[in-house]
Image (tube, rainbow, N blue to C red):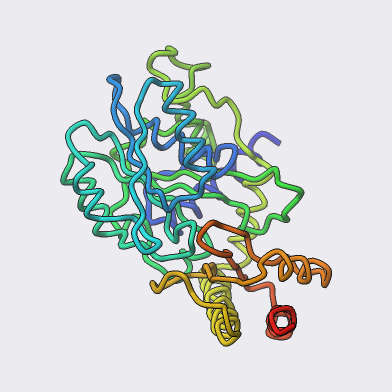
Length: 335
């Protein structure tokens, strides 16, 4: 039983490294927001420093990082947003020798693709570590965090075969380079051989306060989402590289189809003009009426934001469903 659990975690870690391009993954943490906050914590040294977080990251992630920084005595600053993406000029002015890390989300909260490589160059020029929060499905077709220069890659594992489940449980994945391996929170499972030369699995590294001096521990997280990590491993093994790429292509294609169809309706326009993955923001007149009509038809409409409505389409929806949603929007706005 123990070897089976350890092997399942080892396989999960291996596949997380493959999709992120990183060298080492931990055995997972609670969720994507926790992973982002833990990454910010692992980037600091013993002196309080500043964590810069893109204002285009998910609000819940920003708040979780802010809570962690409050607990450690660090300062968190939000990088302004320009045209739905991280403002590079503002980042250049904010990043300095007192910056511990820079965190962005790719694609970001508005669905936009960030200039991730340029952000990484700015972070490293200031001597800061670069953390990327990523959608794991998008990694089937876009550059890996490693290719973009990231030191740490984190994200929410829910898209990897896990049902919505009324909000959880999910898992937060974390991966980094060999250079920063010993700063990873939680635990890392490794492969070795036993006294008879047979392959076996062990907990190789545990930078947790249960095992080392508290002041040297990188985290107080003492568990991992093993069942969710097993689900993610089964999903990734079943899909394979080709399957993950196909899921990403379909998500992106269907979102672009939906965006094009919605913007044919008078009054509905894209708010941001940049490239996007499977989410996008539009204006929407009679917002409450439209979303209520969609809900009555059993369709979860977009998420209301101050900028408009954030829509999403994944590989699981078909053309007929997208057409039906657009027809409902058109009908309500046409009255």
